[in-house]
Image (cartoon, rainbow, N blue to C red; front, side, top):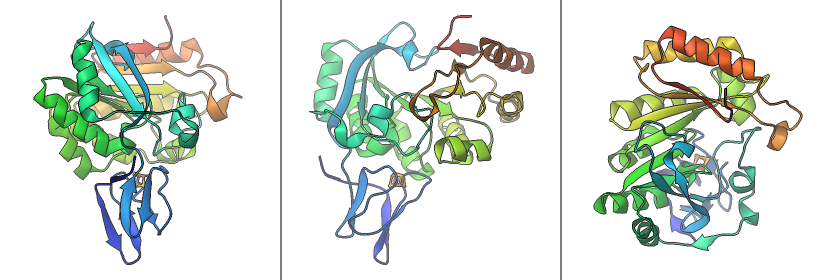
Length: 289
Ligand code: SF4
């Protein structure tokens, strides 16, 4: 469904989108990198509104969030699209192929009604990248607050500070994916940058949102010890050692089917480094050790 987009400005005949750090410069009749925000007659619209492509009730631990409403269910949904192009994407059928996805039209009020009927204490914006359905997420989160329902964003953290600050009063928890810990690898693996993601993490925590972090260990990209150590050192230097950290095992997907799953020893080593350096809560994901 077509909806006026938030966070953009007109620059001569072009539109500058200010929702995520790509800051796409969009000419008439074209869309940004995410493909869902487009310039039509010098107005920015989003097509990511009410067209739900996935809806399910999950354990909150699946997000993963281990320190937020443990043992509860969360109503989880997505609208197709993403602002990154991760070569390892686990959900590329809904993040990258937005035109071939079946959708169901649901309003924010209908999402709330389902949540209440199923007795879920929280709603999660998840599966794809919620930043690209920002307007729908914001409206749903605002409505959730009125009904005393908690809200969760499972995100790549690739969002500008202004829209993030507008969302935060209606956001209770977030799991942020840190895809690598070097700018070179970030760009190579995702097409994005690391620094804005770190800024998002700091902003969320400063604003008292419950945050947990996920680090997917992709062989030959993000699983080397140097990046892991630098990531942990950054957490310690920012006084974020209390933030729960999930090291997740990679399995070959999307454009990286030529790779092997993360060796178990690499996961063990990452856990050991984090624990030794003082991270309080460290978990392994996608694997039982
Ligand atoms: S949200 Fe989409 S259009 Fe806007 S800057 Fe990001 S990728 Fe570009």
